[in-house]
Image (cartoon, rainbow, N blue to C red):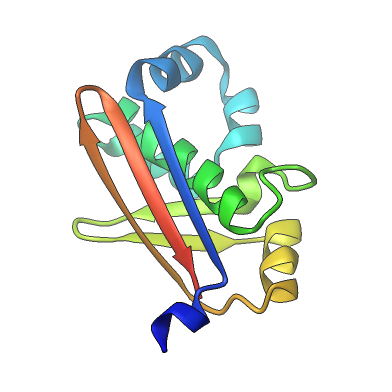
Length: 126
């Protein structure tokens, strides 16, 4: 049954204006501690780049919850959100990948929506 396959669930709501302040305040070196190079490139090329950064940020928070660790012991840039037109793809590296293997997570299903200047990301780990 499907419910027996679920290894983790994560949910995060992030105000876009909060991430906009963070992105506009910090230099690229600091942003590289939070976001991967692919995320930064993708977000910077988007029309609504603050929203895209918020999606990436909320994805990291949601994945940390699904991994049962929060982001304790995992670097922010070890969780990557790949935003496509109709999908949100999760990539894990380093300690985040190790934690997923430890929990026997083999697949992620993720989606996002926005409303009233907030982003909601939910992830399921299978």
